Amino acid sequence: MKSLENNAKSRKVYSNINPYFFFVMTFLITVVLYSFDFSEFNVSLGTKVITFLIIAMVLNFILYLCFRKRWSDAALKAQKNNGSQSVNTYTLWAIVFLGLGIADILYSHGMPLLGQGNYKEYGFPTIHVLMVVCDSFLLLSIAKTFFLTKVRRLQLLCTAGIALLPLLFGLSRGTIVILLLGILMLFLLTLRKKITIKVGVVIGLLLLFGLYLFGITGNYRMNHDYGHTDNLTESSLILSIGKATNKFTDSNIPKPFYWTYIYATSPIANFRYNTELSSPTASTANIGEFLVTNFFPDFISKRIYPTYKDDYQARLVTNEFTVTTAFTLPYTFLGWMGVCVFLIYVLVFPIVYLELIRKFAPGYFDLALVLTSTIYVLMPFSNFFSFSALSMQLFLPFICGLFSQKRVSNKTMKERKHD
Image (tube, rainbow, N blue to C red; front, side, top):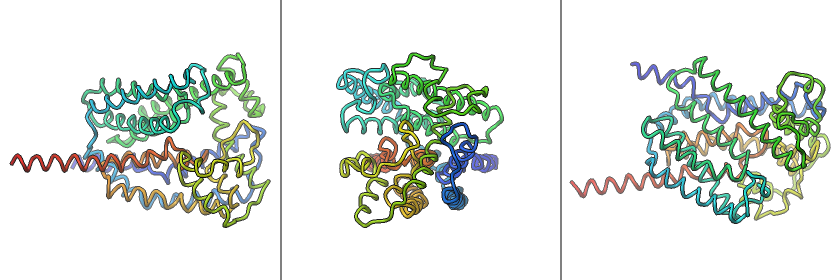
């Protein structure tokens, strides 16, 4: 009876780890932040944009209510039947990825972490992308095992540290933020009781610290790029480029947090800007390109259509803020028709993908749920279906599930032979 009660309580916590829920929450938070008027770029969104966002959030919330219990139960089952690799296997893979990370440094004659080269051109072509994808999934798997067990935790932490180094070498803040989001979701998934005030405060403080650190690293990279020597806490460059209003500069808010504000609101500002300046119409000539560039990892699409970013370049409120929400590129292709098609994909994808995971890789459902939810958390900022470092991880639960089934089959065969 107590076990059932704990499960019922845990559902109330982790049932919200759901892509549809995060779509609603992040867009809602973004719109609220936009209304604070901390930047001169943030003018009225307009009737069409507001109407679309309301419709999108309502539809996502309805689907969240429909699937929250089903997917929560599947995630709990995946954790109960945790078929994770051994800790030694994790350590072996971490060492392999560290070796590839060192090879990237040698190939690029330095690392972006130390200001040596551009992070966008860092590492072996193709191999670096695959390493980042697999290494990120490894770190999620390590976090899952750490949260679910109390065995060999020190080795797990050391292994995680080794696996994290290749990502730090490249100083890809986006990849690291994505990873931290996934780990936070896994932590919430593994809770067996309601979040207490103490745990909520700790999570809140860690989140604030993470956002502050995000601003500090942004200042570091921008100071390096522009040759500035300002104190990292002053944020003078981002305040100037982001056209911070007196309402923000005169406030007591620590200035590195402006990075978070401008990252959260500039994408919607860019989306609104595009809908006001252009009115693209649907054309059969670019439908194929629209489908590939919006729904395939950029690792693939940029090789099929290498010039698509120039051909369908979004309008920007300022050249420094290139993030444009997941709906902006579809708009530049097909106008509001492209936006509607993309929204339909957003609504359908979790149902198809997660139900396939339930059938073919149920032991990895929790990781698949976290990966999908991470994509939807970041939907207000960019289309992460096309971001290879995240979207290509969606294939790994299937691959791991296939190998897990083979291991079980081989073990069963050996047991039968022994009998």
